[in-house]
Amino acid sequence: MSEAAQQSTASPLTTRFDGPAPEWSIGRDMVRRGLLAGPIIVALCAVIWGGDGLWSSLYGVAIVLVNFALSAALIAVGARISLAVMMGAVLFGYLIRLGLIFAAVWFVQDESWISFPALGATIIVTHLGLLAWELRHVSLSLAFPGLKPEDPSATVSPTAAPPSDNN
Image (cartoon, rainbow, N blue to C red):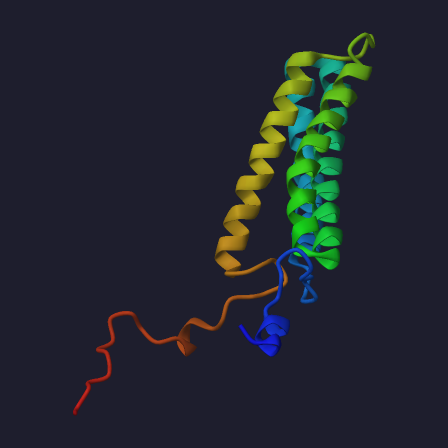
């Protein structure tokens, strides 16, 4: 391989991503949606588990929202450094964030206001619910929340006949 070809080949270890950062937008969107859905989950836990369920659910929603914000920040910052750092941030960031969730629950285990069923249900339902909600939104927008789908009248109908090849 010539020297010019070697210089033009980008290494994934040193290549950085300089384009728009959809992870910031997705993370912000998930936190916003969590703030909208949070009161519903908190109210449901308050009805089922009383005052302890209310406080535990508030704590659980806060844990989930911080987790999603931290995830977006790790990916965005890692991608600006290099793709290899981003991959490491995703892998090790997951383990660190899982440890932080464990620590957040561990530190309140002996508190009088904690209701573990409410806390656990809130963490699980909020994580899965927000991920499903965002997945639906991202798949509908075809990229990330800041990008709107094109006007359907401007696209070609899938039932339209393909152009003929008259050779």
